[in-house]
Image 1 (cartoon, rainbow over the protein chains, first blue to last red):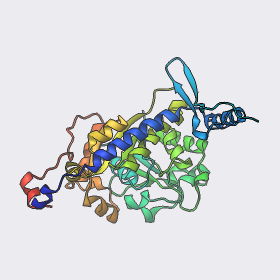
Image 2: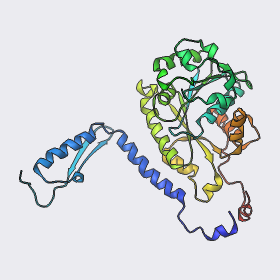
Image 3: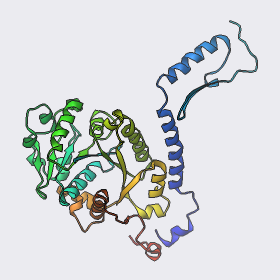
Image 4: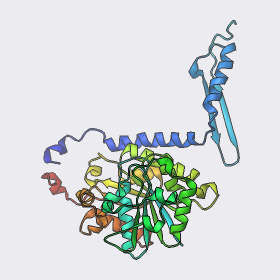
Amino acid sequence: MSLLDYFKTSKVSTASLAKERLQILVAHERSSKNQPSYLPQLQKELLAVIQKYVNVSQDAISVSFEQDDDQETLELNITLPDSQTKAI
Amino acid sequence: MARVIVVTSGKGGVGKTTTSAAIAMGLAKRGHKTAVIDFDVGLRNLDLIMGCERRVVYDFVNVINEEATLNQALIRDKNCNLLYILPASQTRDKDALSQEGVGRVLEELKKDFKYIVCDSPAGIEKGAHLAMYFADDAFVVTNPEVSSVRDSDRMLGILSSKSRRAEQNEEPINEFLLLTRYSPERVKLGEMLSVEDVQDILSLHLLGVIPESKSVLNASNSGTPVILDEKSDAGQAYADIVARYLGEDRPHRFIDDKKGFFRNLFGGK
């Protein structure tokens, strides 16, 4: 570190960037760690059933699992497109 | 009552074997009969760090398979007669370790030793799993670097769910953070995660910080645990860690940049 370096320290520190990225990642990984292992398969099969009747895309469905002290919640969220039923 | 300590990290190359060698030597030097076991079957290196690589006759797998007795396989350290090394097998693979076999060897060691240090291999597979399974205390070795912190967090999840203590609903493993290869100068420049950053993320009790130090390579070059280099910063940092683990209250060192503003200003190294 020399005198010159003191005049070019305007950039964001990479350490704070690292901390921010890690906090997000670790929080995500901790929450998904307690999820039941059947969740991805469940999401896939639900999507297939819904697609039989409604024209929805892959990311229109989300399945999440939450665990509190005394209860477990399975949340299913489907976003339907504007024009409804698809003729099958 | 004997205690089993696992030195673990998930990520490789962060200093698990260096730490295992140093703290096992430190505990023995403080008068506690200690055994240190290499769980890295197929890639053993603890023997090299401890400087006993030419004295290996029998290994951990031989003892598990009852091809040798524990006393035949244990190597007494040349520097400290309270310290014994149980080397890993170099010719077998990780499947040679069984939970039942490891448990049996640890039970036998517990009769005679105060501390049993388990040097875990990297990864989260069989060797790493068995190294932590029977532990009472865990030293989580972490570098101030994203991949190491992430892997340590993963390992903490495994310690709290897949260990014997977790499975049998006993009191959980005591987990301690050892932050290694720390460079206060780089933290000051915003180039490296600080101790507080890592603690914020992992929420672990800090046992000590080992500064990035030339003495670690010098120690491994010569096959003497770095804690025996009492003049070195890393050696002193490990001695502090052993003292804190044994219940002494020692202020943390090697966290702040020792060099003054003016030395930095004029490019001091």
